Length: 103
Image 1 (tube, rainbow, N blue to C red):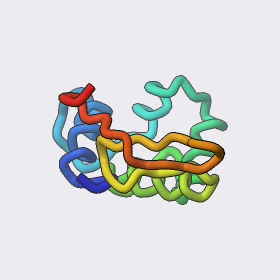
Image 2 (cartoon, rainbow, N blue to C red; image 1 turned 120 degrees about the horizontal axis):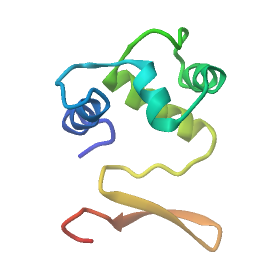
Image 3 (tube, rainbow, N blue to C red; image 1 turned 30 degrees about the horizontal axis):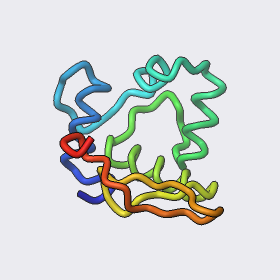
Image 4 (cartoon, rainbow, N blue to C red; image 1 turned 120 degrees about the vertical axis):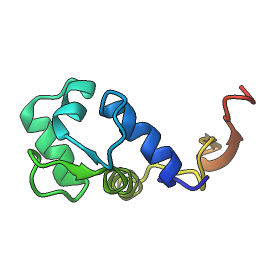
């Protein structure tokens, strides 16, 4: 599946919302999960393109913001889920199968 595919996003979103199926995530849940203070959360929200770190966001937008931010700082992103990236002789290679059934 592609990164930020709706199936993956909804499963992750449900975890951030204590099992409830919703399309939004409250930043307080992210803050608690990552053990961040308000300043760190505001910085993260800003880096992902969100303006108000107190306002909930769509789970899909959170995923897309995270992917976009990671790409912007040079992190190699795989073409799809269950694929890992690694470096060989200083070059990024994205192709290792890390599907749970494979591992």
